Image 1 (cartoon, rainbow, N blue to C red):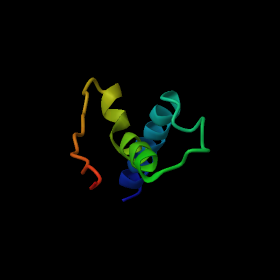
Image 2 (image 1 turned 45 degrees about the vertical axis):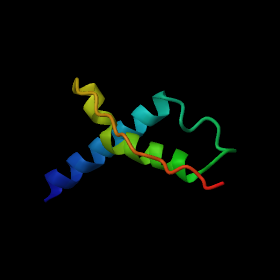
Image 3 (image 1 turned 45 degrees about the horizontal axis):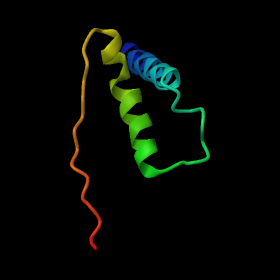
Length: 66
């Protein structure tokens, strides 16, 4: 169990480093749910980029009604 926990912590630290490299923590003045979601997804999937994979998430954002 300790090895699994350590691997998860290391994975998340690498993901946070990936988000930091992309500059997601520089400007905190315009915080939004979209930016938080981007940081969270990058933290979780970011290490996959270092393994040579390029995960992409597509989501359809509904347009506001007129």
